Image 1: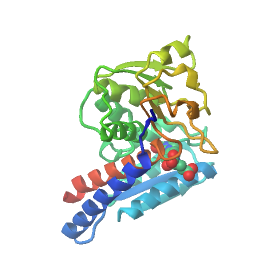
Image 2 (image 1 turned 120 degrees about the vertical axis):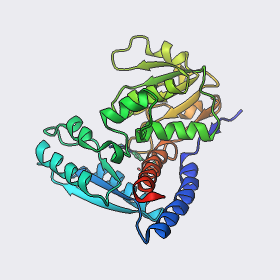
Image 3 (image 1 turned 60 degrees about the vertical axis):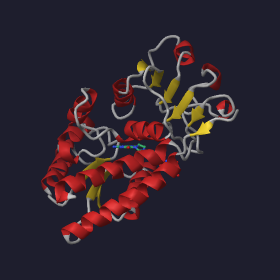
Image 4 (image 1 turned 45 degrees about the horizontal axis):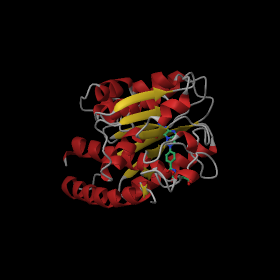
Length: 282
Ligand SMILES: Nc1nc(=O)c2c([nH]1)NC[C@@H]1CN(c3ccc(C(=O)N[C@@H](CCC(=O)O)C(=O)O)cc3)C=[N+]21
């Protein structure tokens, strides 16, 4: 039996059509206003520049404007905080994305947390995380929320299932675990200090690869009929999970590329449109 392919690229494309309609309606109603996402790119890492460009392109495809802020790698925490405050105060900005990672002299957590809650469409603030984890309304962190939206679209059962999240980063593993818990999964979080990693993964109905190391998770650790979600992205179209041997024996998997990545961007845009509607009045 060949596995169900969780096609994030197709779902993102379909969702963009709905978002285009919503943006057009908002524009019509408000006399030409669109939601605006401000993206902040610090430094000159080419991969980060590519991702930020892709986010701007996605805005354009749904008819939204974006404001692209580029800052030098020599910037201080105070300077970046001042920029974020300026965007918080700008009524034309409906969402703010600070691209991770920032240079090491910058306090990334302080900068994330400076983003106003109602503009945190990337779901990176402590406040947004805490609210989400407690089941209160908040924008979800883009990658884990994108994964939840993908699982939902393909009607993957989560309640009662054993989900194993490999990785505990602030904008991926931790919020992923909280979202799966809120969806009534039994959740195990594995990380660099976990002993018996293979045994934990072997008990998973749903495996989430979120470690950031190419093919760190071996196919042989994963049971037949598992749902496999690979949030890794490495040069050459490689994820965190050794995917090829799994394709004919698991229940479902996210391809790399074309799985989680497009849903990350789509969730950012989706939540920016939500924010625009709330602020402009949809
Ligand atoms: N504040 C913040 N929020 C993020 O969401 C965030 C971030 N920082 N820093 C970096 C990571 C990485 N990330 C990706 C987004 C899209 C693809 C994506 O669309 N990938 C395509 C392939 C793209 C290609 O052609 O290389 C795919 O998987 O199909 C990948 C990775 C968002 N991130």
